[in-house]
Image 1 (tube, one colour):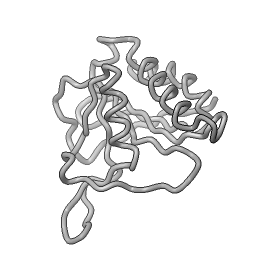
Image 2: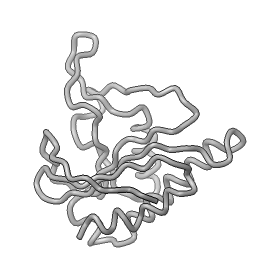
Image 3: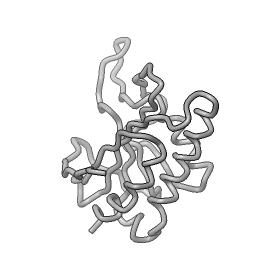
Image 4: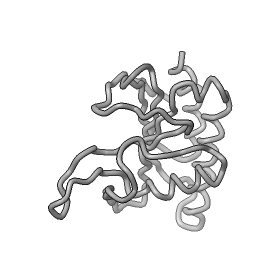
Length: 158
């Protein structure tokens, strides 16, 4: 698997939080029905729910539920919201990345059961470097390969 991390700077501050994972918006300010809104992936609410249900502290990185709109993707592939592992969360819990990826993988196998054996997913994962700087990677491939990026995410924290 050839996945190269890239370092980027977010155009908004990463909130101080006790949560281990933040869901990043696709756009922090768009006009929708004459109102300023934050754009997130359509799978954002499902991701919030499954991660929280499995004991992984998760929240939105920017905006709140009342002011967000969702981008819908019509495809048999699954498009995840970008997930940011916050500051020292990985060093405090070295298993956080593999647990998170396992939860996502199990969820996807459940929702695609009977439809597709090994669905394709489109995911972006990031780790906080300092301030607004993050290192991120994109994964596009079968669900069965998602656990392979765990070590790459772990390495990005060093």
